[in-house]
Image (tube, rainbow, N blue to C red; front, top):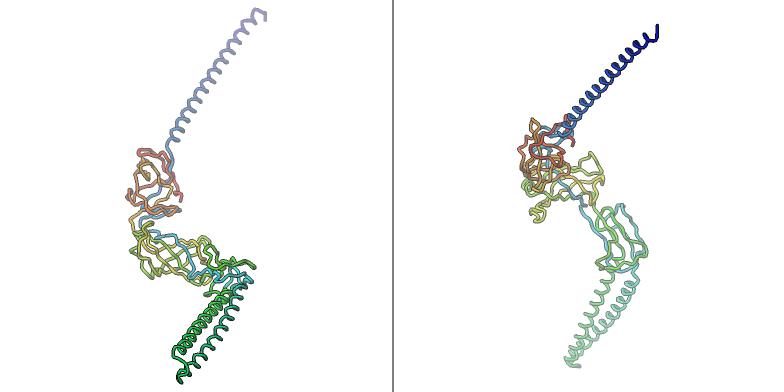
Length: 396
């Protein structure tokens, strides 16, 4: 084939290659535009979905399911209040006389009997005072006996008109004065003997030693207001539990009412207690009535000073709903709660709050009792917002 014939053929081939490259380029551009359009549409849909918050709700008035709790009245089985556990009897033991600690015989946690010696003090000054008082008593007693015999002798001589009545009366008066001095010295000896007996510290009743500050050789000063007790004895065979009941529920309080209580160190264990007395007066500061319960403590599980949760089988005194504390919105105009209608529209209403029980709060006004309350609402939640209700159980 000649050169003239090959040149037209090569030009036709190049033309086809150019057209194919243009078609491919147009296809790539079209694919990129389509992909970008789809991505923009997906992003717009994602943004629209993200603009609607997803919330957990809790249906009021329905039986509690899972971990959710929101019940009206006393559906939880009673009124739960904090209580303070105290020993049935407790006594701080102070020294009644000055001295030094010679020995201490018991330590914290030891069981003691009534009258058992706890510590022994050395009181050398008191010993010297007692010896001096006894010597003074013997001297006064000798003078009393001499005055007595003298008065008797002068009375006999008066009967024989050997002395004047004035002289006999003076001897009788001297005997009476010496007798008074003798009685005073005897009383002083008894006082010092009693103080010497206080050098042995004893337990006033059977119980447990809950504190000890006595140290061997330590100086003990009686009557010092800043002094610490050397020992503290507590009778823990039976315990007292003090609870403050709100005024609204105080009308249901009566002696003999049974109660249960729990302690944080014994999870799952419930202790039985009986209401023994009530103060029958409302405290002006807290608006509560102080009551006392008693509980047996055979295994010493209850400790003086412990915190307990006491459940009284009574109502709270109000027609209140209990909602999770996380559902409360705190606004400038006061606390509020948001709830959702079947279409997902939010309504925020102001509410009145009652007792705060930690995980739950009493709502005394603002709710009817059949709303779907938002458990953890966003801070910016407002009436008219649209939310999406998540499926599953509401968190506790």
